Amino acid sequence: MGDIAKGVLGGGWALLVGWILPTALNLAVFTLVIAPSLHRPATLDRLWPASGGSTALLLLIAAVLFGLVLNSLQTPLYRFLEGYTLWPTAVYERGCRLQQVQRRKTADRLADPSLTSPIRRALLREKLNRYPMSDTQITPTRLGNAIRRFEEYGYDRYRLDTQVLWNELTSSAPEPTSRQVITARTNVDFFVALLYGHTAVAIAAFASLPAAQADRPLLTFTGICLIILAPVWYRAAVAATDEWAAAVRALVNLGRKPLAEALGLSLPKSLEDERRMWQLVTRMSNRPYASAADSAFEPYRIGSPQPSGDPSHPVSE
Image 1 (cartoon, rainbow, N blue to C red):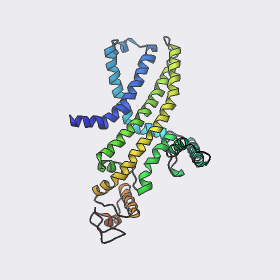
Image 2 (cartoon, rainbow, N blue to C red):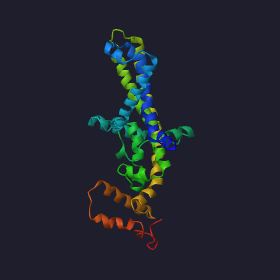
Image 3 (cartoon, rainbow, N blue to C red):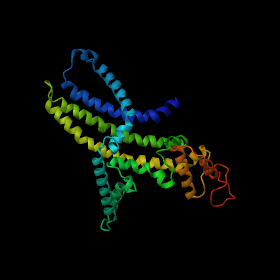
Image 4 (cartoon, rainbow, N blue to C red):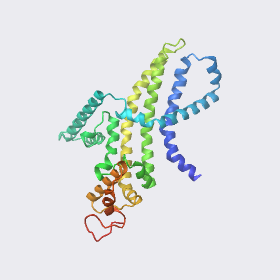
C-alpha cells in the first residue's frame, strides 16, 4: 500500500490532476452543451449508449485517454505558449521587444519613490521577478518568461545548466525536493490543459452553430464564456509558476552537492571554483569527449586537493 500511495502522490497524481482532470471538465462541457446539437448517425448511437451510467463510464475512459495524449504532447504544448514553436520570426521578435518594454516599465514603476504602498510594491516586485534577469533571455510571452527565469537560475548562480543536467539533478537530489518540483508543475499543467481544452471546445461550439438541431443561443453563450476564460487560465498558469520557480531553486541549491558526489566530484570551497567545475560538467555532457577533460576534472574529483584556497585541506566533505 505504501508503494501505491507513493505512486499516486508522485507521477500518477501529477498526471491525474494536471491533465486528466481538466480534460474531464472540458469533455463534460462538450457532452452537455455541444453533443446534443450534433447530428449523430445511427452507428454512433449504438456505440454511445443512452444510459447515464454508460455515458459516464465512456466519458471517464475518454478523459483518461485524452489526458494521456495531452501529457505526451506537453512539450510542444508548452513550447507554443512560451513562444518557441510555430511563431513566425517577425512575430517572435516583436513579442520579445514588447516583453522587454513591459519589463522596463515594471522596473521603472518599482523604482518610483512616489510609490509608497507596500502592497503595490510587493505586487510589482512579484511581477518583475517573473522575468529573466538578462534581456537576452527574454521570450515573447509572459509564460515563457516566467518559466525561463528559473531555467536560467542554476547557470546564472553556479554555471550548472539545469537544461542539460536535469535528469541527473532530479535523480540525485533529495526526494522531497524532487517531489516539490513535480507538485508545483502540476498546478501549471492544470491551467495549461484547461486553456487548450477550453479553446478546442469553444471552436467546436461555434462550428456546431450551422447544425439543424443546434441550440444556437446556448452554443454562442458557451463559446463566448470559454473564450473569455482562456486568458484567465493563462494568467493563472503564469502566477502558478511562482511555486514552480521556488521548487526548482530549492532543487538546484540542495541538489548540487548530491549531484557532485554522484558524479564522483566534490564541491570546492570557493564559489568561483564551483562555477568552473559545473561549467566543465556541462561541457562534458553536451560536447564530444576531449582528452584534456581528464586533467581538467582532476582537481575536482573526490579525494583530490582543492584547486584553490587551502591546498592542504581535502576537497571531500
